[in-house]
Image 1 (cartoon, rainbow, N blue to C red):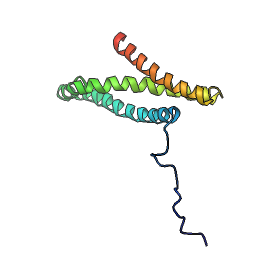
Image 2 (image 1 turned 180 degrees about the horizontal axis):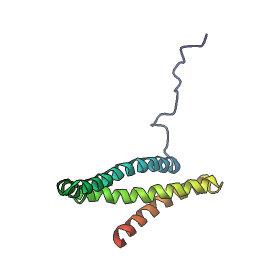
Image 3 (image 1 turned 120 degrees about the vertical axis):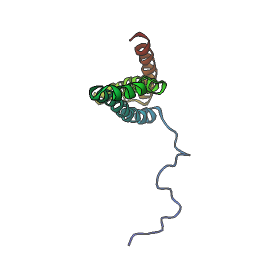
Length: 127
């Protein structure tokens, strides 16, 4: 029979001893940005449905979307869209067998963050 008493051995690394890496954190943020885009997409769908429903429903939805909170959600959605896109491109590069070294993959994660911020600023200012 298996030994039920495993002693004081840890089952997995605890957060206090695990050092987050660029690659793991950027990968987690890609997943979070993808889920955040669902929320923004639902908000846009609500706006379109309200426009098709009638002027009263559209006024309510449009008031929300054009409020400061709606503007913040849309700005963060642009950031999430760029970040998620760059994360997908990074994975395509990794799937081809390139930039798999620790140094290069960490640099790719850092560049992903910088490029997402720059592309977001460019999109908001120019477009």
